[in-house]
Length: 395
Image (tube, rainbow, N blue to C red; front, side, top):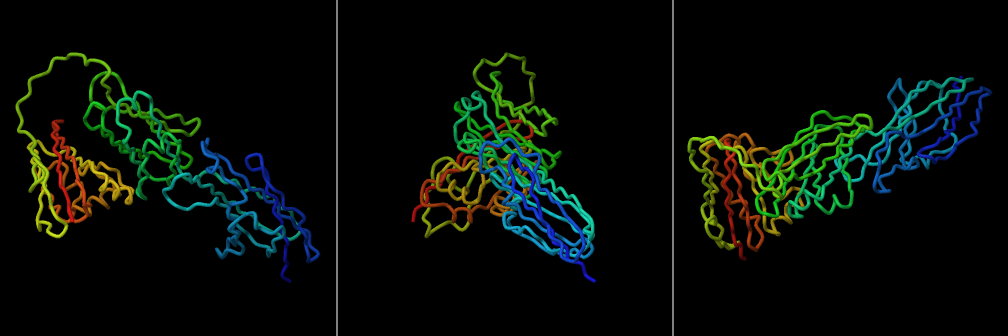
């Protein structure tokens, strides 16, 4: 005889609040009871109330372990009825908070599951604890850093699933990004108030669920332009603080003897037109070929392209791309956009003594305005050279 068990769920305290579902009724003369509590642990210290999970919005599924079949499911826990009919068997109860994007703003993801065997004539206690299943990323800036760079700096944080771009507005607002667990990369692009670009790339391979990676941008007063990074990790609260220090200009540099070095050939940056003075093209009469060439006798270490004009920046905003890219050290998302645009990978650029890009197709994407691309080349010896390609596009 098939025994039907009517099961109710009691939702216990979740972050000091909850709701109860009681009164199991057994209809086959048997006595059975399943008491279920659903709670969440490991929540991050949030700065925005909408990032706080609400247990009533969690989805709930009951899965038959033997067959793998979902016997009951609800998109919202608030819609779960007070009585649930189940046949005696082994079940897995799964719960999850809303949000399934691998990369998103303000999306902490809670997940949890518990297995229970339902038998007639018994009472089972089941507690499903949902814990943070993804990673949180925050960016903070010191006053020294903000005084050192122009306000249009960006911090691009990426995983294999894609990037999130932190600008000053998002950082000031305390916005946080959330990523599925995967190695992280961080790219800083900034322009000093006194002139010159500041870039920094960091890879973080040691990652786990519940990690809160905090990138703190700071500037020293040593007078040196080199950028160094120190990392300290506080495992007690599962936060990982990555301190990024850039050299400042507040003090005079300490004089140090400079060893004599052999002279090296200079880096050269040329183009079909537009390097030494602006060139004007019409959308109706674009050149069939247009080359951008760099010669780097010591080999390319960095090949940075900084998009300066507002129209092209708007196109990059739509693609969620930063305004500056290092073509010699692109991440997966950048290779998917810039690499496809130029038909290259970073391996085609890094270490090369000459790199030629055919960018006639890129001209077609330029809006009708003055388009500026700043090219900054750093060779293996640390020598840097820059030039600006200026193309005035008309109808």
